[in-house]
Image 1: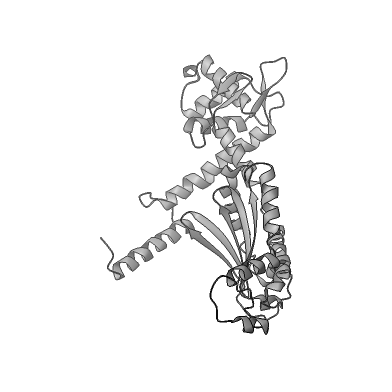
Image 2 (image 1 turned 60 degrees about the vertical axis):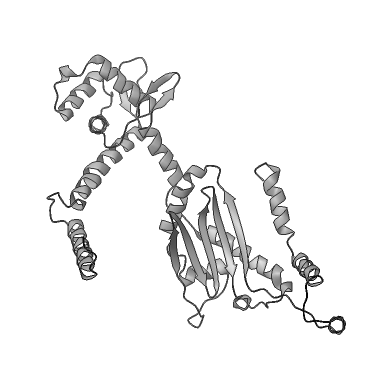
Amino acid sequence: MASRAGPRRLQQICDDLSADLIEALLRKWLGRLPHPFTPADRKAGYRYEVSILQAEFSLTQVLDRPVHGRIFFEQVIRENLDLGRPEEIQLIFNRRITRATPGRFRTRILTQGITPSLHVYYKSARIKQYHKQERALRTETTINNTYDFRIGKRLANLPKLRQIGFAANRRLLDAEHISHDCILAEDTFQKINSPIALNGQRASGLRFADPRIHALWHALILFRLLPNGFRAGDLRDHLAALSGRSPETIGRGAMTYQLRRLRLHGIIERTPHSHRYRLTDPGFRSALFFTRAYNRLLRPGLAAVLPDHHAANTPLKRALDRFDARITAWLADAKLTA
């Protein structure tokens, strides 16, 4: 069903699964299988009646870029942990909730292997959302008690349940939000860190936390406020100072390579009819973010996390030390230590 006509045909097959078809299938097999009702009983009106024990209604949205599907779904989970609150459940199921409404209203995140799933509950009903087969976002509403929605259990009520189930799926998607385009951000990060080819020219990536690239980011920030931009010699002087080297040790070919790499990645642009360059807005923001993230978050954070580093007694370090001490004590009490 991967062709263009496949999804439409598949949806038509699903829509045609009606109560009448299910009833016809049941009567077909009841006519062949033994059961306690004699012909006289059936003629008198006695027969089995079909009831709905559980109904599941799903919406599968196949992603055109499945490689980033997990990034997107994990961000959705992270920013929508409040979906199980009563005020959100009211919107999703279109039902009024009071203190007398039975059931626990909560959001649960369950992980099977490496695949997380989001679960939202209303009475005996549940909405489950997960990344299906690394290709699609799957949203499914399962109704275990039709009386939760003031609907009977007979098969004839299936159309009403379909409306409730599919509407809940859509309302959940409408209620979900993310604070940023995580897929676009991932693309940008990978593009900066990966080799690039443009107009027949190639250059290596600007790898995050590489000491040479880190010095390059630092040097570029210093040129932000220069109205006339900077020259190759200006960049060489700053790179040498930041790397603890003499400017004479950085050759002209090395500087040409660095300028071409920055230009192909869109970090700098050349001023027309000159040998000067200016830092672009995306280039400045990238340089600022990468240097601040490394200097203020990654480096001091790792110093606090790793046990062999003698970091300052920060709140993060104290919390991790307490956690490690509790785990060690728990293992000792359980006789699980080596």
